[in-house]
Length: 571
Image (cartoon, rainbow, N blue to C red):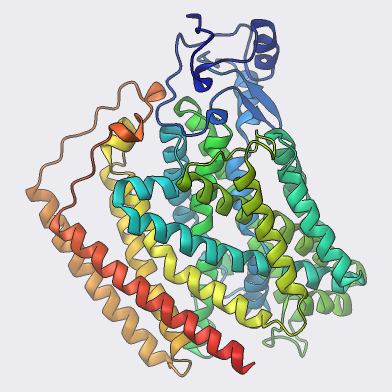
């Protein structure tokens, strides 16, 4: 290995001697350490984002290029990488998800269970693209948008993320109050302790400690297993609901809005920002992308099984009882379990809700703090102490404190806040996915890691569906009297416009030949420094599309905020 001059910049300095590096490598490697002569750091903005991977379950030395030949060596490497995909997915089954999934189960049984399987490819494609961006670029999602698309979109991505995530963290603490209320614990001390635990876990100056805390919370979600076995939903009914699409008899408008709520709960904007930044902070490089994809799949399997369990538990608990079709809240589900199944079942549900709320608050808060510090160029790493990353930790702690305070204020419109979060998430998700797709086709950003044609076609279709659902959700909030016929008209009109746009895009793509990217050397390719990149040239079509999206977002967000604020004042 080429010696590093002692006066080189901090980002190039290796603080670990050879003996320590060999010890650190053993859990993830076979016999001997193999290090690259020089590890490119590319555009990494924080020096702490370069170095050995210190995961909760293992360590990999910086510059490690050893080939993992045996299953044991591959498994040890996977254990060291495990974390980002698992945490972001399990964090997605948060307090809001508990409410949405149990509402679907209590009101409609297992009839909407099939929506979870439809969302699996959407989850994987979105999260795979951001983990690729993180590992290859070393730059957070918000900063890439700022650098590649200008100040408006950069500022918009951070401001709307901050507002939406702050409200989302409030819903997490609402989940805490519901859980501790059912368990008979004092409300105010419980919320304060939860906020202190979530804040303190991130401020230890150790990435590994934080990840271990998160994995403990991930393991805590296993309490859904005994709960499911106690309630024992009919297996045949669960399988039919999962694999046979259908809609229950009743109000189509109510069902469609709940489906949109399931989509918005399962695929949320904060996930994109969290996964990309967390991959960077964990120091995962392109070489380990295949292992991170496995980590993501593990998380997706767990989140889908957990969501399906909540559907089934709520359905089986309230079937043939007066509460079926009359969902109130997650606390109402816990009370129903305690009444119709056993007190232990209600306690298990409340513990699962408490666990989900805490890990959700930690993940959403971290996504926000990462994005803000990334854009302004401040230090932003869990490897750092509070003293060396003040603004990063201040943002994180402030979010927790404000959310806890809002929940504890008597008379706070918590129901309106929850509704506002779901609506804003639905409005903002299509734009987040659009920028994700554009970044993943930017060859200066991803080089040999850019998307292929099939992935682009699938993601474009997903964006079209998300836009249509976003319009329906926004319209339903602004005009609560929308009936099924009007919703169907919006869906059909959107589908026709999307199909027409797809045909135009296909014709344009055929007329504009695209050279295939050179995929060689992918394992070591990193994005160059941001200052060396030229601004992407946007076609007339893309400029028009971005302008239209800007207008839609501004108008929709303003109208939704005004509507929710008006209802809040009336409340």
